[in-house]
Image 1: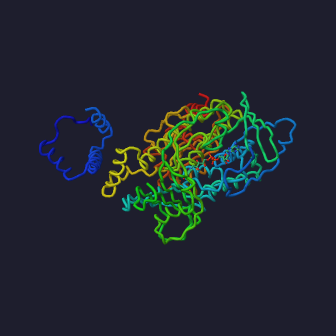
Image 2: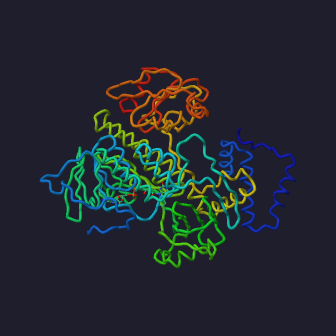
Image 3: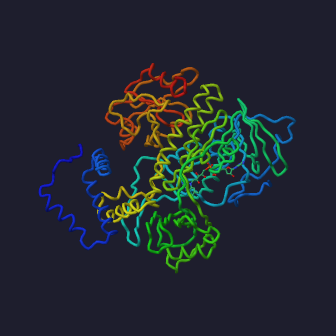
Length: 62
Length: 542
Ligand SMILES: Cc1cc2nc3c(=O)[nH]c(=O)nc-3n(C[C@H](O)[C@H](O)[C@H](O)COP(=O)(O)OP(=O)(O)OC[C@H]3O[C@@H](n4cnc5c(N)ncnc54)[C@H](O)[C@@H]3O)c2cc1C
């Protein structure tokens, strides 16, 4: 499974707003911890090791 | 330098005695000298001595050091000790545990049950104070000596200086009655992590130092509130350490291990009142206990570039050092001995070429790298070194409390398991279609029930042709080396474990097994030409 970098989220504006809302009221440290948990949850959902490696590389070098 | 003890003794088992070598007109030559009588040196003496090869152990103390360093001894280590005939007392004395609990701050994040796989003579591991582990081995040496095994242990014999020659080493030794000199065809360096031998030979020992100190206290308490389980706290709210480990040992003793940071005043921290302050914070002030032993450690992960230097061979902590998370120190050192013993024996008896010993470095450096990788990862999880690493560590712990997926990411030390010598020089072909991955060439043979006993009792010492529902001759001799058949049928084990571990989906199998119980190669039938080639390969003749 290759990393899908084509549009894949049905309602992008709504998703983005929800993501930002999720950080409402969090301090910088809490936001960072939230993001870490989110990354882990999503990574487990993806599961495929090669895809995760690709995603890590893509995030490092946008 | 006077021969003062560097540590207190738990058991004085080999008091200094004058040896005839000290009065000899010319230095006496020995086939094998082992420098260091720690667990690895004594195991080396047992392996070689039980093969009938004269071996002399030199140790600068008169017995076993007091502090229990190692407490976890894994299955493979016990299986090796069993080959030497000393595992039963370890098993009898040791504590078996299966339940582990992980805490973050004051919350229990989750617990796990190791649910041991059935059909093994030995448990996944036992907890036992290292001095007992060593004592049972020295007692086995005494019994073997009584049966004629040519083993000698010389206490208060400190190796001061060596000279390496093409085919031997000259050792200058100091004793309470003055110095003397001996020669050794082979010298085994089992002199521990700070190996003076390595220093004498100017050899490297590079790796990573972890910038953290650990205060270790063994305490005796009669308490029901701490059961036979392993409890690990990340960032405990009692504040006594950045992480804390509680682990049961025999004799009502618990190991408590506090991570206390890098910049610490050792003398101050080790004062009884300060050790008690931490313990009281953790145990709650009303628990009565006695401090048996305490010490402060810093940890490193490193290994020598080369374990073999001609006629000098390093084993155990002298060759490699790991952080203790995952209990891979003594456990992996025992695997070094298991690996080295038969190879050195064959080379000394002229059954195999000298280069067989190069495979000792190849295989055990491979094992050391695997152990270093595992213990480095555990250490990084336990003591995160960057803000991001700390954040992810805590994210894993937070999620683990509610979601099963995060639990395998929690790493407070991975159990020591032996490595498989995949693709290395002595390892042969896998010609058993459908054979299980765990018994592929290079693997240590897993135990299995057979009749009223266990498979591993029948393997090791020499080469074995293990057949399962397959035909093969009783012996096969190739270039002076004989492999003996051990014939089994899947029906010998009603539980099905034997078939599951050795046949997989195959109907029959032929395995060639090394003296250290590792698989050389396997086939779906007896093929004489292939077996001969595998046997040559396993002896370093290909
Ligand atoms: C806190 C802690 C916890 C640990 N927990 C575990 C665990 O749970 N499981 C595990 O498997 N391992 C564990 N280990 C590692 C384990 O203790 C070591 O791997 C093991 O002791 C190594 O044995 P060795 O024989 O190689 O070296 P050592 O035990 O260090 O023995 C070396 C010997 O050489 C002698 N010597 C030194 N210099 C000379 C000289 N010049 N002449 C003659 N003799 C000399 C020394 O006196 C000593 O007797 C732990 C270690 C620590 C520190």
